[in-house]
Image (cartoon, rainbow, N blue to C red):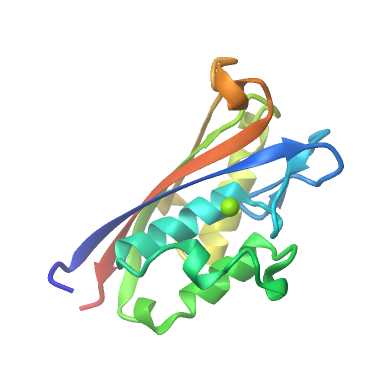
Length: 162
Ligand code: MG
């Protein structure tokens, strides 16, 4: 790697449906609907994982955790994130900071931001000051605005260990 500082970006979207539990940042969020997916469909963690993968130009989340692989059926976000960080490619890098945005018309995310920040900081073994989570609605526009999906977008900065 040429640069001792690497930026990564990731995004993800999942359908919001009845009969599923809602997980974001590995936190169970009270909601009458949940995200649909092969895994637990934690779009926030998936965006974070893709940002980490992107920072080191390793491909994408589908390459590491194919949604056709039975071992990842209903896989929780913490399991996938821990497994990703165990990849030897990350051993020479430390996390600078994470900035994650969740776009959801429902449910209201504000009451859950602090617990999601804490959980991500714990999973990433970093200080909560290094984890920003922002939430916004889609102003009732398009599929997210109609309450049919939730999207997450994330950037991370990695520093090469001295
Ligand atoms: Mg996903």
